[in-house]
Length: 384
Image (cartoon, rainbow, N blue to C red; front, side, top):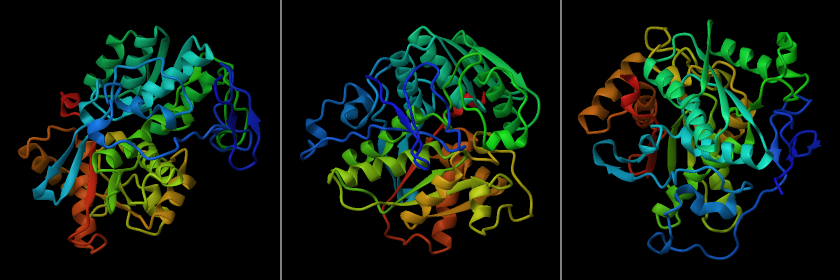
């Protein structure tokens, strides 16, 4: 049976089903009531059957496998010129790490008997949800900014999903999508934080920011790193933060590994935000603009001013001894050029975390001999 949902704050339980709420009536994001993990010692990587990709870790997942391209187990490669290891998350079927969440989210949709999904995205999550919806044989509406990159728009359209282009900023796109999910009711700013959460409108909200099924997929990022490092964890992981889907996935995954006594210790989770779009940095009292006091337009994938799970991101930083900084256009462009020259053909948003890695080292937040993993999150082919 599909897992029910629970609010971690008020502990209200919601029964699983195609009309299950997308958030609690108290305004908080929901979680699965089930929190499975295996018992006993894990197999070494060379003995694991990884042919099912991230679904190799099915014992950790509160979802049955229904929709998959056998995605996952992306390469973890040495990058000596960066004194780090890069995890190549841009080699997924749709060219970004968002496929981790798409396979679990669409599998959940199939479990529940959903007929149509709706998502809002700057591009990568939309392309992933559209592609996996096509694999599942489900309809999909993807709400995107009016100026979405053509390559990402085409990825959505070619999967036979319906892109809905919305004028305004990224939050306007989310608001329009939620209106559709809730049946088109006009929402005020107050209702964005507290109000009816029912999925009674045009489809099931397959949100990469709100839906717990998405985070069930992104937490496999941590499982793979641990397995690829002989069931140990690095000293730190530097990750981009918009809505924090990969950041929180890493936190959840490493937390579960510790609960299962598979690893001993948590890596420091170090966030990287784009200058001008850095609410986590602002909350922590840091500088949120670049050296000229401006924002950047280079990192469209993380231009988020209202993260759905902001308090969870802050908790993950606090509990792992982590941090968050904002990087500007000059640093991003420099890091992007350096990545390309090194053979890593990634999109600009992907360069935010490597740029932040350098800033963390210069600020002595990271020791020179610290073992560090940085995900490279999106393919440069999507910038064409």
